[in-house]
Image (tube, rainbow, N blue to C red; front, side, top):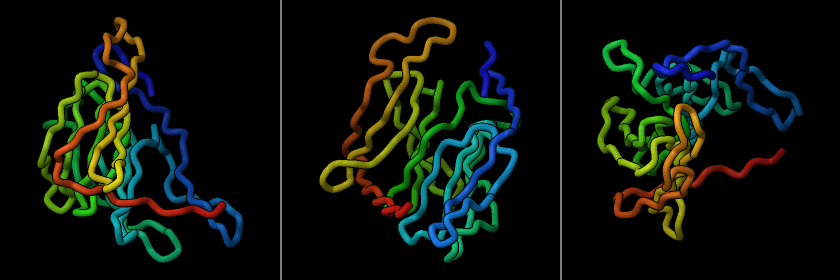
Length: 183
């Protein structure tokens, strides 16, 4: 992905999205023509998968079967407002136990909490750094949202606290523990 001065995104779409099958020890192609793979998360039941290809400027939901195959692609949130590209790209993502997703916005100084069942933003969390890269729940109760940022110089140096790690508390949300993986 390359950002122009105006924030336009050029995409080659050369990527492929795979899952690893531990039984056969092979990689299975799930999706082709990927621009920039970023946010990935599953609901607590493990039957819904949320995915961000930053070049698409949206979050997609897929149903996941017992073998890990994807079906029923659905856009749950589109960041291109009225067909216009926003001044940021969706980046990393996590999910809480209620099923809401939290999306970092590179260039947007914001984490968006989105309810996939309604397709609505239910909370905007402002971060004092422009390049918000990812989010993850942590803490002893998984009720603290950790937000990573970058300090990548595009047009000008990014002032502090760019590149810092932020901890957001008091959200009234609990994260979903991710799964152990055997490779």
